[in-house]
Image 1 (cartoon, helix red, strand yellow):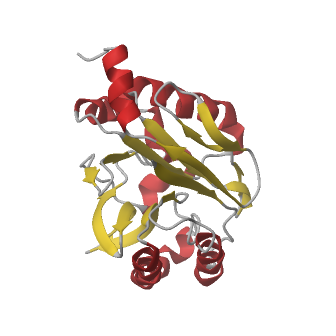
Image 2: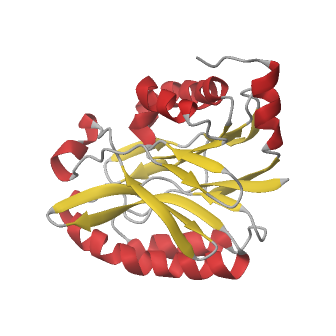
Image 3: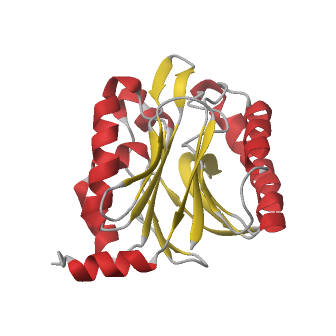
Amino acid sequence: MLRVYSLQIRPTFGKVEENLKKVIELLSEVKEGSVIFLPEMWQCGFDYENMKKHAQATQEVLEELSKHSKEKSLTLVGTYPTQEGRCIYNTAIVIGKGQILGQRHKIKLFPLYQEDRFFCAGVENTVFQTHFGSLGVLICFELRFTSLVLELKKQQVQMLGVPAMWGNKRKEHWQLFTKTRAVELQAYLIASNAWGKVGEEDYAGCSGIYDPWGSVLSYAEKGDILLSAHIELAQVKKVRESLPVGD
């Protein structure tokens, strides 16, 4: 059995230290050896005016999280602004037991938030190998792209993390996709969204944890909260064997 958490917060726009403090406080409540999923761009929101500065702060944020990850043998999954050369990326980073296990840049940038003006697009739909099994990550808008889901399906990921800042105007789409992608992948899906007003945008919340049948294990529409569930990754194999839907 593995304990997983979806951490839902309302980030304070552009306030890295304040957001980090909030996350650290919530992490103090998690069980040792668990896996925690954080929202997209939780450390600053889409504060484009100061994004280069926020990207420079990411290393310090990761060092602080890595310390807590090591102390409690945690795996942490979220996205952060990073810079490589002239490019700033929206980057999913996986920390496992104090070490950076890998990263991948957001491939599908959301035009309504003008991400394509301020971020460079990634190219690799990386699957992360962790101590508990194989993990795929789709970042917010990417949840809409069947091509990305099928890539992860071919690699038989056991768990899909979805860090997001998904707008409230499209809440029903978020609720639909998070459940149906779990069914499509026949994998556990952990969706971690921001909620409430952050900057000029109102976010949907509605974070949740879903099993390979699409059943809801934990869910919350609003509020700063740690959703949690015990999962058994052996169930992924059992579901796939009982209902074969491979190519």
